[in-house]
Amino acid sequence: MTPATPDRAALHAFLERHQRFLLTTHVNPDGDAIGSEIAFAHWLLSCGKQVRVLNDSPTPAAFGWLANPLGIEVYDEALCESRFAEADALVVLDTGNKQRIGRLARHVELHAIAVAVVDHHVTHDGFGQVNVVEPALASTASLVFELVGEAGWTPDAHAAEALYVGLSTDTGNFRYSNADARAHRMAASLIELGVAPEVTTARVSASAPAGRLRFFGEVLAALEVLEGGRLVVLEASPEQFARHGLVGADTEGLVDMPRIIAGVEVVALISEVEAGKVKVSLRSAGRASIDQVCSRFGGGGHAHAAGVQMRGSRQNARDRILPELARVLAALGDAPAEGGRA
Ligand code: 5GP
Ligand code: MN
Image (cartoon, rainbow, N blue to C red; front, side, top):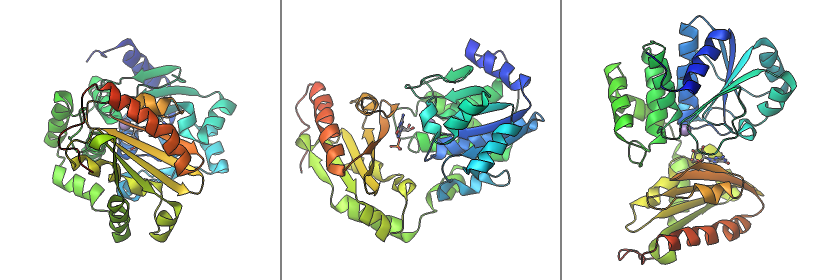
């Protein structure tokens, strides 16, 4: 099949040109990051290439099973150094922002390695020699799926499942506005390739320790309803993470829950995993665009799902983010919904 764009054609040529690949993704990887890496790795292996996958952050427990049997390595200075020395090309998936690959960024500079970026985020600095960045696609996995199709490869069972994880997690299990016809068509193709949605979804979601739900319960019990019912704010403290034995990745799914409240347009989760290290996650129910709020402070994402890391206290993060959200909500130009009640 002919590649759909010149950038895609350039990527296919890039993959043909190189032999020993290192794959990576953003810090605190999500299902799309890991799923895309795994599927991409299987594709390259099927082409007879050498492949290593190395990330700055550990793989969250929910996606650990996807890593087998290939293995996803976690950053260590010496290990990273030897992986860069061995490789002749780096493929960065699910981010086009060099800072977002964490400690690997420095090695990219040291090694002057050939870089290709495969991503679907709006905000990127295109640091690859080849950049395939398609914000119209629901997930990076969608882009990988279309790329392998263009190359004439049929994903094997494991790659198909990895792609399904990427697609289903980035669409909030097909509930977000990016769950369009193209996303559903891709899901249908993956099911035809043998993916069982109930099995794959259970592997991802039924992986939490009980403490995670207790933590969710605590955070949700303290939710604040602001801006006439249109904004919900959640906060999690370092003490709560520590007491339940959790890490930042354990908040996955939490920010989506308040959206079941009638009239909510935006949800903000302000989590301070360690004292002074705050992560803000924003979700929009579909009308408000919240990515600029994050990019203004150095983060990014999509119109309806975005995030940013901030230094300082939770109060400091609130003082910066909440007025911006109030402005975005005011610009929607209508009165707060009838059902909006605190
Ligand atoms: P989450 O809130 O689930 O961590 O992230 C939602 C979306 O925002 C994802 O697409 C993610 O890639 C993006 N995102 C989250 N945190 C950051 C950040 O610190 N910087 C950038 N550029 N994007 C982020
Ligand atoms: Mn993604």
